[in-house]
Every structure is written in C-alpha cells, then in structure tokens.
Length: 338
Image (cartoon, rainbow, N blue to C red; front, side):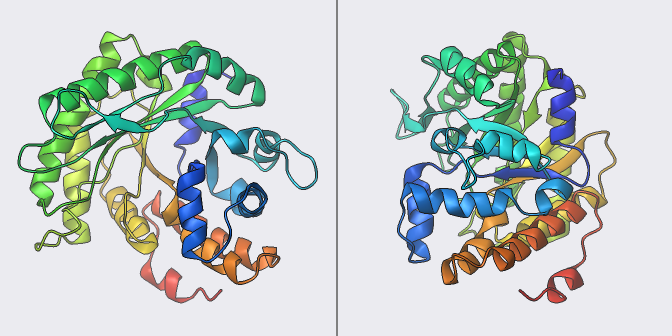
C-alpha cells in the first residue's frame, strides 16, 4: 500500500489513533498512579486488553507502539503488530528518543533520535510498522519559544519525516505547544501558527511528500494556569482558523493530541471543531491518556476483568469516533455506566 493511502486511512472519519507509545518510565508513572507494579508483564497485559477490544475494528485506525511493545507477543503467542492488524488497525512506532536541552538556549528542548534512524526503520518495517511518530515540544513563556527552538525542532521533524518516507512509511509530525503556563488562548494561537509555518517550510525543503504525512498538533487552548478560561466554541474556532491559515492543502488530515485535557474535554473539543469544519481536511484524534485513563483505573481494580476494561475503553473510543464526525453529545456520556 502506498504511503498516501495509509495516511488517508489513518485520519479517516469515524476512526482515530490510539497512542500506546508511553516509554517504560512514563508507563511506570501511570501504573504507579493506580497502585500497580510496572513490569513488562503488566505493561503488556494492559495493552493487550486494549488491542483486543471491539473498538479496534470500529473506532481505531492505528496504534502507536513503543520499542518494547512492538517486539512483544500476546498471551497467545501472536506478535503484537500482527495482533493489531488482525483486529483491524495499522501498527505504528514512536521513534524519537526524547528531549534534551537545546545547546545555546535558555533551557529549551530539542528532540533527539536521528542517529541510526534509517537502520531502525528497516527493522520496524520488518516487524510490521507502517507509520512512525516524532514529537517536538515548545514551552510558552515571556521569551519562549525562541526562533532558535522553533527552527531547530522544525528541521529535526523534517529530517525525520524524510527518512520515514524513504522507509515506505507514513510520518506523524507532532509539534506540541505545551499547555503548561498562564498564557492566553491568543498567545497559544500565535505560537502554534509560527511553529506550524516553520514545520511545513522545512518539510518542503526536505522534499517530504505532504500527501503521505499526518499532522499531530495541539488544539488552541489557554495555558493550564491561565485565569481566563476559554469555552468550547472559542477553542474550536481558533483551532480551525489556525490550521486553515498554516496547513497546506496536500496534507490529508490532522490527528490531534490531547495534551493534558481530560477525557471528556478532548472529545468535546474535537467534536466542536468537526461541527464547524468547512475544509477538506479530516480532523481526528491521536490520544493516549484521553483514551486510556478510565480503562486503566478499571483495570487496576481487577486486572482479570477483561470484559469490563474493554467496555470502558470501547465507550471512550466510540465517543471520540462520534466526535470525528461532529455527532457526539453530552448525554452519551451520562447514559454510559461501567
């Protein structure tokens, strides 16, 4: 299958991406928060429970995996990428190696992982991955993000994307403007616009085929400690306007990150964006915590109660599926009881 076809499938209406690519450290914190020991067996058990749910066929287009998980096999001995394909989704892989301090900056971050990436992609392709993900992060403060940070991360994202496409896979390009801080929604709009313009400029310079690329941006939101909160309509209008002004028409669609929003907030805001979407872009989700949190809490109470954990996960996935078409309603949440 061509990368353009895979990219379209990843952002198709009614389906979105499950981000199950938490590093061992991050997954450890999540499991600790529900009093479960973080070991390879427990991490695999929880993820396998999600990967075998009915929502995989109806609501999930792709799954982003971590290096540990893509090399594991299920309890029945099926390689995890094969299990995901069997259940109707496309396997993908997180390939960046995290963030480090950007030399010469005032504490800003640059994402690492380009060294040896081509060789790693050859291995991941053989394991069954057909798309990849790389995340860059930008903080907002009085003097951040700097031009240096915006340019350095855009260049790294573009080099990554070019390598991924050479390996016959779809790159998810994730430039995340963080919610941390007291900045206004307008400041988020301004910074996100600058970041996206620079990213697409670098993607073009590096001959990345935009038709075979998926953008994973933040929504336009006020900082988490901003006193002036924004309502759903304002978030939707500003997010749509920002993307209309910065995103080239060749990109098939967007899979939003949830970035610290609650499960219902992430669903509600995506729904509002799709209700007013007057573009040819498909807007879907690529959520981690906002898809998994309730399922994780349910699983921690009874790890063997697979049916109930899957019921909770299926509900969340279906709610987000409805929001990709602007058909979600608040009453759907109230009608659900785990």
